[in-house]
Image: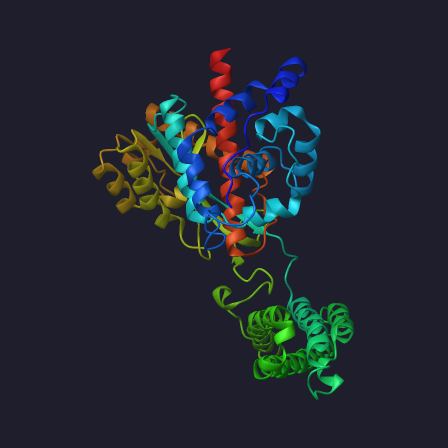
Length: 467
């Protein structure tokens, strides 16, 4: 049964007041999180856990406790394990999380509940936080600056040899687990369940040593590695078929058999894709387009992004577009597919701002990568008085004079602050690299990072104002 909150504990309150004082910024965040609309957004996702979660079963960990502990996790850049430890150890955080003298939920409980929160819920959650910032006069939405960055996925730099070895490793360990289920119940030979991980790793290391120095010897090692991978795929397909055909005699291992089937159905196509791209790239000397490549079998949504930056010519992750208003509030994030043109992000940013604040900004700015005559005209047609889109390349005398206007140069200086905002998000709120798994996990990682930043920014502004 879904439990909303613990009853306040008067003895805890008494002890807390005698011994501790909450940090002013955290105290303001505490007040913000009391907003009923914020609470109901998260509660609605938690209620989806099971069909009758709200009315039957033992009492769950309170929604309020989970929500506040997830906030603490990203405010302080903690792991789930550290979050559990810090809340258990601190009277201040026990008060903030509304745990009082109750047991603090462990890290696995936090993970299970956190994984229920949807990307669209976090977007709505951030919109409500922006509305609260507007009500508190932290921002009025008069200025908009927009820019993009790359959040890396948690993968090693991809090579075809590593990807093939990873595929064999995943299929091999799945075959070993399937052996425990199928071998006692069927007449299948043990050779079908052979784990070829060691052979694949050996060949992958051989490729790494030879491919740069002796191209032909490296290709020969690649052929052997591809052969090993194909053999593992053939075994996996045979085991998958056996799991499907023998479901009636595996009733005692139903859940385990289902998990094995899901794993094989997920990874077999990905490993086959790696084999195909290896053949095209290594043996046929074909340049495979970035959108046709797979760079991780574990994070297949990862894109190859080239932004031409010194020191990082290629990045592996997702491009994230951010909108920020005055007051330092990030009003929107958008996780893009692949590496689309920056020019396409201007209109969605203006649309989102107008929908959120009910009016266009007085000033809107972006980098020169977003400049185009249609983008400039679009902003002016919406009634935006100061449109700041520097034109790249050669400029006419009229354009040069326009961009030297004092208001334009002042707006450009303000726009430069978006780079600092991105730096803060990466350094303090872990938006440099996503540690969650899967595309849904990526959305949650980015969403919670932005939300934690906004909560702290609002809390700091209100606390400074109140003295």
